[in-house]
Amino acid sequence: MTPALPGPLWSRRDRLRLLVPLIGGAALIGLAWFLVAGRDDAGGQLAPVSLAIAGAGVGFAGALFWLGQGRRAVRALSWHLLGSADSAGCETTVAAESVAGPNARYFHRRDCLLITDRAFPAAARADQERVGRQPCPACQP
Image (cartoon, rainbow, N blue to C red; front, side, top):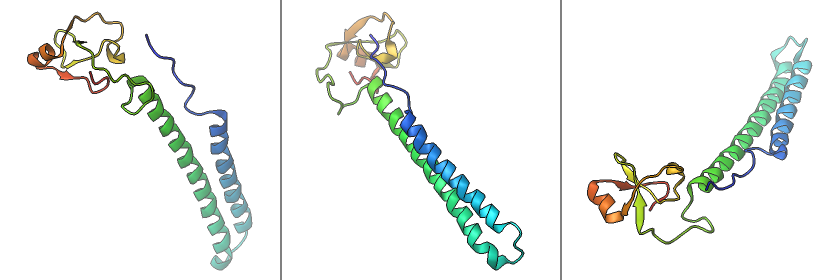
């Protein structure tokens, strides 16, 4: 049984949080371009160029924040799919029997998402370790 997946990585609010700094940064860069146009002396161009750099910084900061939100969403999704030792509702009991394929490197719990829909034979943990298999890093049987 596969658990229900959470929603999309970025919500409408997150996309808005990206667009506002990008549009604001682009507006600052456009204003700087308008102010610097037609000026010949370098001293008169210094303030508009600084304004353009600030606009680029605003857009860059918005993009970093947006990517950070996506990274946190991916981390939460991976914890949801693979399970986490500190997640609520996590099973703390150790299964008496674990499953593995004939030439597998790891043995798993029966409910591990990495072996969903596979009919592997069950065996005791000691038998799995005696054959040389290691516990699955995802389900940690």
